[in-house]
Amino acid sequence: MTQHTPLRIGFATYDFPVLSEPFVSTLVIDFALRDHDISVMTLNTEPHDAGRQMHEEVAQAGIARLAEHAAPRTPMGRALAKTRAGRFVLRAQMARRAGPFDIVHCQFATLALPMMSLIKARLLRTRALIVHLRGYDITTFVDTHGKDVYRSLFKEVDLFIANCEYFKKRAVALGCDAAKIEVIGSPLDATRFCPPRNRRPYRQRSLDVVAVGRLVAKKGFATAIDAVEIARKRGLDLHLTILGDGPLRQEIQDQIEQASLQQFVTLTGRATQTQIVAALHRADIALAPSVRDATGNEDAPVNTLKEAMATGLPVVATRHGGIPELLKHDENGLLVEEYDSEGLADALLDLASRPQDWTAMGDAGRARTLATYERGRVCDLTLAAYRSTLQS
Image (tube, rainbow, N blue to C red; front, side, top):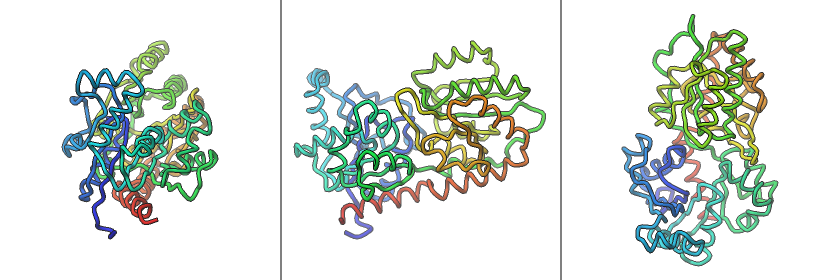
């Protein structure tokens, strides 16, 4: 097989396209643009919403048409979806429509368990199975289901891709052969997430802080709101904008109101990449206060943090998960401990006191993200991993 031979690739995910998973869409687009034959298999057996909101690039590329959904299309199918055996049948039908493949690439390890069942039953044909380790799958899911939950996968999967060294180490500690894991970060669109032509000077106005992410516990937004309250009490005039939605929206809104911060913290709800870029271009500082939540869920180098750094923003983030692999303290931002609202407030006050350092920090951050996560590089590395696996 030559380096230019097109591959038949099946991306396996729970649903597609998903607004909070641009890393999947980006890989699909980039491989399709390189003339590989792509299908996206979605294991969700709930009714599929064809009219869902999606990022502009996803809509323009028309990649939603590449998806084969396990979601039922008939009354009989909807009846099947109510049982475990029925869901297996629906997924088998999807796999047969989509396959066969050179590579099946499960975007989360949790998806590899049902996909492996289909492969063993010869309902899904592929030359190699590759499994991504991204966060929940290697943290909360393991804590919930036990350290042996992936024992069979560690033996049978051809290659694992961890999106940070931190998750590779976790997988090795669970029994995976280190030689079967490559570290490849999630792709970043550095042409979309780029510095503004003219960033507003920070003089005699409120400090504009932005955070992006799903409203879930591990994103640490409760700690961020406490930090805003502390910083304001210490005399820092600032406003925090949080772009994203999720199950904790009402709880976070209640926290804002109880602290009387309605004028100083704004929840925008779901945002497209265009809206996110606009907010980053208006901002002075980006905030990524991720924490290990009560279920054990942790983050890799946060995708939204990479995007903020790519626009040239200095950032404040936590020493959490894979974030220290991306952020170097006092070089491209500041690091504080998890759940430390006082520390977050201190860091915001520190950065606000030295705007003369923001440009150097922002430049260092963009250089770091481009060197490691630029989408073309990630596509090259992923393709090389595919070909190496097929040749082994």
